[in-house]
Amino acid sequence: MLIKQITEDMKQAMKAGEKARLGTIRMLRAAIKDREIELGHALSDEEVQAVLTRLLKQRRDAAAQYAEAGRADLEAGELAEAALIQSYLPEPLSDSELQQLIDEAIRETGAQSMRHMGKVMGLVKAKAGSRADMGKVSAQVKKALS
Image 1: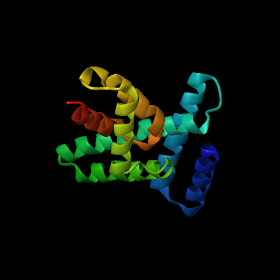
Image 2 (image 1 turned 120 degrees about the vertical axis):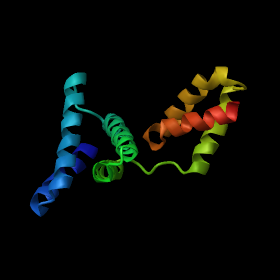
Image 3 (image 1 turned 180 degrees about the vertical axis):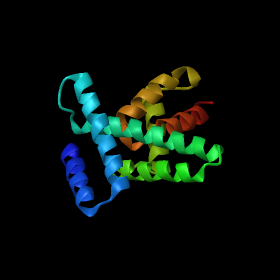
Image 4 (image 1 turned 90 degrees about the vertical axis):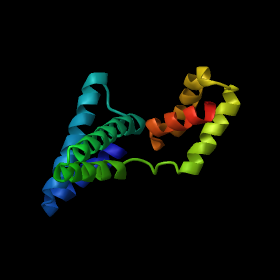
């Protein structure tokens, strides 16, 4: 279970005195707990991955904003948190695997234009799960359908 792994890592970070890592892990646990309360049940690994994926996107977006503002110190902090969050998620799909998945989805749905983008995106999301950045997928699907 992913939650058990996160808890174990929190204990290790406490023992090792790794304050930054501990803070990030506590933030992860709080977000997971919030989602459990929201849904009213313990989260499955897939649901935990969805929470982690959302947090990862937030960190990457924040890092990009800090980079634009010239705040390298804050950007580095966000990227460090993003790296830790990424370590709990499955290995992302490579560009070629992602393109293959998109091509497959286009064939299966019979998509020929941008009108069918929703069908293709839904199929890719179902197959890729948390292993693909949906922003990147969207850009590649637009390119393929235009």
